[in-house]
Length: 125
Image (cartoon, one colour):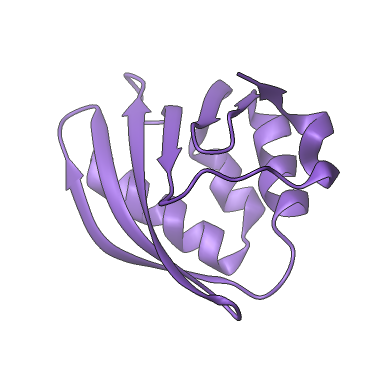
């Protein structure tokens, strides 16, 4: 079985490359993603793939500063770089018994209102 650290590293590599097929292979069918700063929740692999592929247009890059992992979970510190600047994000991952990502909680420095263009893929909490 692949380690939690390797799963999370591959997740970020696939996101940065916009390799949504490889990204999707890392997720369970009923994955749950939450972003507390925007109060968004996404349920299910298909919706989460669309949320990422459609919901984040533009030029951006992800660099991983650190991943700390246990047996079935990990936390990553990432650096998101966009033309408007750079910010750090902290992301928590829970993995299932097979080593696929079952739950993600994504934290950014400031609360924000999500773009309207991805509202159809999320629920607010």
